[in-house]
Structures are given as C-alpha cells and as structure tokens.
Image (cartoon, rainbow, N blue to C red; front, side, top):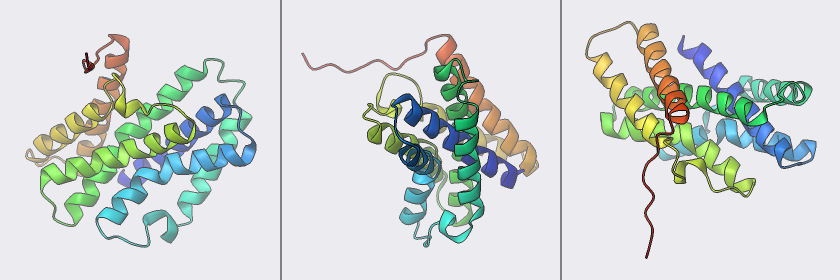
Length: 200
C-alpha cells in the first residue's frame, strides 16, 4: 500500500506541476522541469535535512519514469481537462495526502519525535508546490489564506492517534490519506480559510 501510494502521489504532483506550467504557456522543456520539481521538491528537501543522500529519486529511476509518464499524460489529455483549475486542484489534493504520509514514515523510520515527523510530512507534501508556484511566479498556496499546510499537520496528528490503536499499516495509511484529502475538499467547498494578518 505504501509503495502504491508513493507512485500515485508522485504522478499526481507531476501532473499538477505540468498543468500549472501549461497554464503559464511554458514550452515542453519548461513544463517537464516544473512537473519534475513539483513531484520531488519536497522529498528532496526532506532527505537532505535528515541526511539521507543521495536523495531518493536519484537512487531509483522509477520516480523519473513515473514523472515522465505523468508529464506525457498531462500533455495528451490537457484538452480533456476542460476545467483546468478543477483538475489541478484534484491532483494537488491527492499528492498532498500521499506525500504527507511518506514524510511521516521517513521520520518514524529514523526514530524522530512525532512532532518532527509531522513537520517532515508537511514539508514533503507542501514544498514541491512551493517551488512550483515560485517558478511559475505565483504566491505559493501554503502562504495564502487557503488551508493547506494546516491540513497536513491535522493529518499527521490523526496518523499518530490512529497508530496508538495498533491498526494494520494499510488501514492506517489509507485512513490518514483519506482524512487529508476529505478535509481539503471540504475546506474548499465550504470556504474554510485562516484569517489574514494585515499591517495597518
């Protein structure tokens, strides 16, 4: 289950990056680069911070192939995504749920405190999107009013609470990812926002 979620998350973020880049009318090379950094940016930063080098995608070409497939699919079916924002949001949300889990698991595997594991999960899920938005000259979603990183933190808390119940790993992963995805969908549907801070 964990391996499958990893593949799904990588492809989802790659397609999210590709769709964003196409929306900005970049050339094919630019679209591929944005797809690539969106998919691996958060994981790369996480691995460097925990001293795991070379970083994951450099040791397993599977990730490069998955990103390339996501890139090609996004281009082939871009006209099918008639509602580009809806498609981008969907892929981004799937990636958010899956990559939070991956970051949590990496922290647990090296014996880090749950709070640090949650920080790693949030970083893994969010920072690929931060790099994507910066390169596409957008204010990153994580810094705007939309609830984004907060959902990853909530998902991390749910993960550790459920872990105390000694659930099977597959059930734990699936439940946590569904919580993250569901809460983000509801946050957008019902317009849940954090208040902005203004200097007057």
